[in-house]
Image (tube, rainbow, N blue to C red; front, side):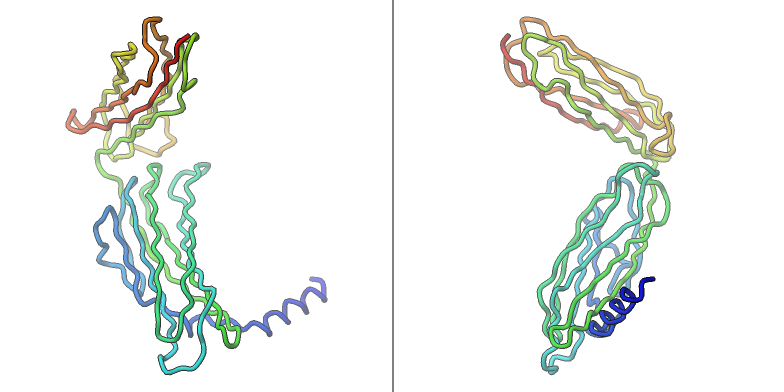
Amino acid sequence: MNKLLLLSLITILLITPIALADGLGFSDIDVEVDGDAADDVDADGGSFDAAPGDSVEITIEVQNTFDVSTEGHKIKRINVEIEVDNFCPKGLDDEINDDASLDNLDPDTDDSATFRFYIPDCAEEDNYNLDIIVEGKDDDDGTVYKISKKLLIGLEKNPTELTLDFGELEPSTVSCDRTFETTVEVHNIGTLSEDAGLLLINNDIGVNKFDFLDLKPGKWTNEDTYFEKTYEFTLDDDVEAGEYSIRAEVEYDSNSREIKRYQTIIVEDC
């Protein structure tokens, strides 16, 4: 390493002391999964369970641990960051990395930040680390305080669970050329095989398609776990101008459960 660069790094470290614990502390950590509180999480860390598609809310409360009678030692520029392992197979963009700033903290005061995210539908069953990193700087002597905590997410898939999504409508507006395409994608994110029925419908514009689906459990990228198809439709000339909603509907779990999605197409006069 260049000697000048090495000396510069040493100088920076000497000028800016770093403390790993004193000055900042976690006063509380709360987690809710789909609105239900996780009982095994507190200021010391812990673990919670979740499934693909679940919403997660994490509230992190940070305290200036200096005694209330201490003069000075206000901590400023406090940043809270969360990082989560990739849930999904490689090549899918599912990274969860977020941060927030807290108020300046006088001794024996606290502030909190709340983070919200969804467990990706493509998530695989496993245990995942959620890292919490907090850093702030002492206003008196420039000491940088850094603390961290790790939560464990136990991810388990539900036995029966499908997802349904529209792709892009192409084109989204039709006029003289009455043809358009839309893509529908269905994934089995449960642990059991599913026989399902997929319906695309809007009788006003003559859209009516049905497909039987046989979806196996497995990784998101396995071909037998998902169905993807592009449908082409041509409107009759007598379809009036206006906005029309196409409904996609999938029934599964012996027809006891269903998902509906909607997509709007605009028809203009030729």
